[in-house]
Image (tube, rainbow, N blue to C red):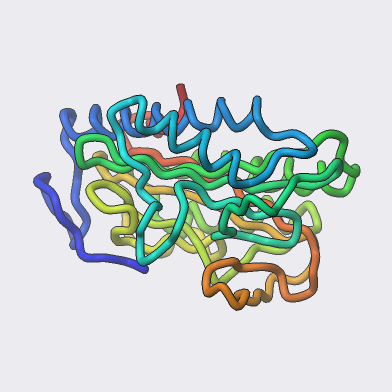
Length: 262
């Protein structure tokens, strides 16, 4: 799903380095995405349909002078992706799909603001969840922060990948290997592809102005996946639970700049 780069900005090794003005616009797109997640935290509960969540998300995005990035992307029919339990990514919201006590739901959100994209996913508990499900959520979110910590000028892409993999596997879970992070900016998917597994000290060297979406996807069982007949919904092959956490960020001269927070 990697697309050719577009936009202004300086390029290095095929990757656009964003300037301060562009980063400010991306930050605003990310802030809108964070507002959607804030609304999702309040709306996720037993009995709510995934179509209701989608309608809330679209309203928040459009009310902030932005448009839903996912809607119509390669034919995707909704504003957000809603993936429940063994579904990993790209679940399609439905008025006939209702959340139940004990579910976990991954909600992936994209917003385009004045031509710039923010992209973030979070996995939410529905009411009280099992200890095993809670451990999966904590491991996946922790892996995201471990990857972000490595997104520093002078490091390499492999440092991010290795940190995510090590965090997840040390807690007894499996990294989904068929899907990963990506560059983001004018387009939702830009180079480079960022694996959630790999070796430190390998890959492209990071430079200030690079912008990425890091998104570990983790399974409680095996990492193999299947795609449903709808052509979108990806789920674990063995039916085990899966979680997905994602932030858009920029590499700077210091700490990574996280775009998709309030």
